[in-house]
Length: 346
Image (cartoon, rainbow, N blue to C red; front, side, top):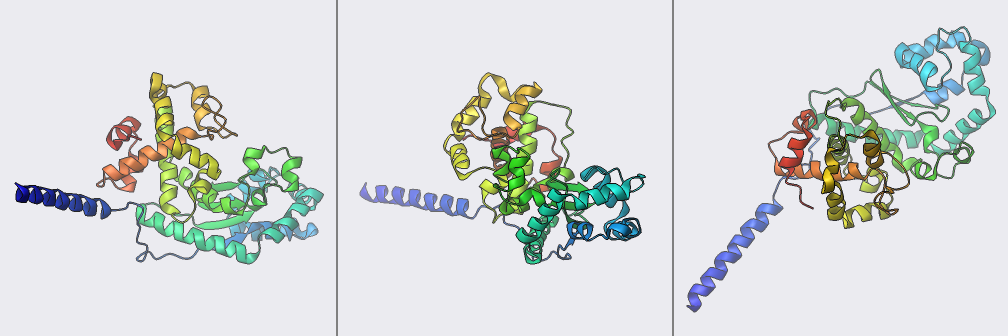
């Protein structure tokens, strides 16, 4: 009897060890080998410097040089839409552009950009982005990456722009949460909190991913939005494994801690009364829009909480469906299928 008991315990111990090592050796979907990826390192073209170096009496003559350097489509879009100066074919083009670069506030901001972002700083951003893009190539080998990378000054209009295969960053939107012009422009505190150097890289990567994968599913309910944005943030996690989750989500550490601590209750809140299938845009916006908090849940609950939960569902889906590639994930438009197969149980 004693021997049988020992044998049984031993068998249980062996089973436990087998399960433990099986679990421990389970493939980590975020473990990406980029050693075989060959690509040119990301080097940013400094449109901010080029614009503020223009000779006032030679703007028209130098425009062709800028078009050739940045591409006519992107440069024209920069002038017409990003800084809203009418476009290169507008009769007041040179006059409008001159007003922009000689404006006291704009020229002061440009000087502050040069103080905050040295050439070395921009080079380091390029290095980090290169690593993220190598991972992107492994995840999505058939998809293209941007052809050029640009820093610009938008006049406080845009953080990240992705147009004509150009990933461009408005550096004046990352000068630190206490930057004087943010207060003058009355940017809300929840927004300026993320307008700093550490948030630049995750913003740029997220902007690129969101542009690459659209949310064109005809089913317009909260679950669809939850899963779509969950995919975006999940992919960003895989592309930027060394960047803290708080930066990638745009949360404070306290907000992230809240989500982790109350994950089960948050999920229960959305499951209750079929909130997941609500197609009221106002309701959807309440849980996917930016802001200081999600008021219908708690002042401690961060904004965009549906996106955070969506990421947890997508992560669970990929862990439980190892045969599903990242391309399969982004091509799967059935949010209900992803939820069902995720086996998500916080």
